[in-house]
Image 1 (cartoon, one colour):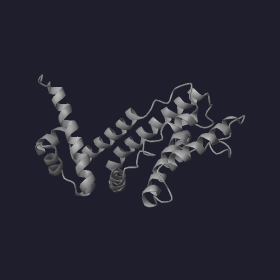
Image 2 (image 1 turned 90 degrees about the vertical axis):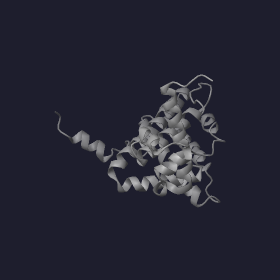
Image 3 (image 1 turned 120 degrees about the vertical axis):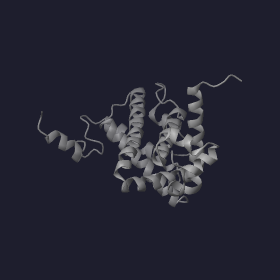
Length: 230
């Protein structure tokens, strides 16, 4: 077997640490897990962990990024012009219903989100993860709309934010009341959203994401508009 280059060795060590971190975090939770636990599980020294990650928070954030990239890479490509938007939604069936169907992974994310709310410097980093998720959804929505020749009746990022909120909210309900709320309810909600957006797209002119007037202006956007130039 050819000897690994230094870059390949670093990547293999990092991948092993992320795999071990996922197992340890799942077993103990974010608060109780330690870097020593993760190093032991991976078969490395504590120094190997610090050579790749500054602290436990950085390691967990790297794990979140890894999860998101894996999800992006594993999802079917949704820009086939021969497909309708509904066919693209149906193609997601069999993938667990949503990204958070795994209870251990979802609990970890909720635990870390609560931790971030109490630590503003961590919240800023988690914000980047959420924005990356929203950007991914926005890109997919644009691809599907272009392939299906559906004009979007609202800004794509507002629609993406709505999809992200639906995914998180339905995952929470599905984990607390699985008998009444299956994880596949997220796909049902996408179907309803697709029908609503398709109907709104036929209205001339578009009347906003809910058909109740112009799209909403959030406080941060309004503040930017009101700020003096220069």
